[in-house]
Length: 225
Image (cartoon, rainbow, N blue to C red; front, side, top):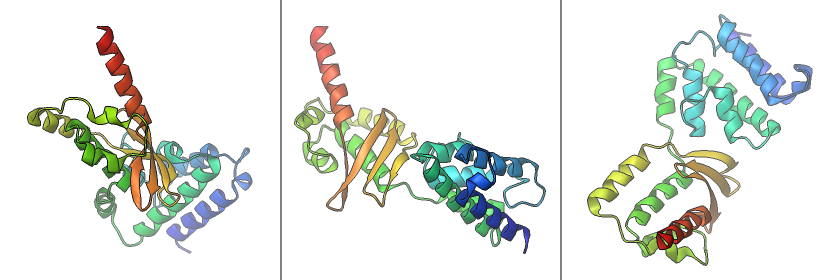
């Protein structure tokens, strides 16, 4: 059994039976074990890497901003400790398996190619339609809402301004922080905060309630001024 086999065996055992390895069987305690291996071990598939490839790999896989250390990225997207342990096991095993056939540089290149999720792409399409106040493009992207007309009642942004707003929006990472694509419901973090996205008849639709609430508030403020 080589070092990668030993590491994968440890990951599987610790994540499946955390009570055998830690006092309280929490994700944080198990993650601390592997963080220690990452920092101090000599021959582990996750150690001796000043480029922080594991952090980049996991944040890319989870569509989480790269500022997070990998345990924080997993904690951000997992609904509870059990979900976090499952996700940690999946990602650490995947990373270790890649180390058999890929250099750290090639793993970083692979991670950089992970595509943005469809809910995140729907959010970006929604923003473009919102800047243009385009009802025909907004409606298929949102869940039904009695006040949805507020989303296209504003004056469209001038073309040059709309392009600038799109460029600013595209610079933000849109992360899935809870739910799953398989379940048909996710929560994404956008530049305005958390937004729920639901799969309806094969298409992802935003719950635009927080955006509509902001529009209402802005209109009330403008009437008062």
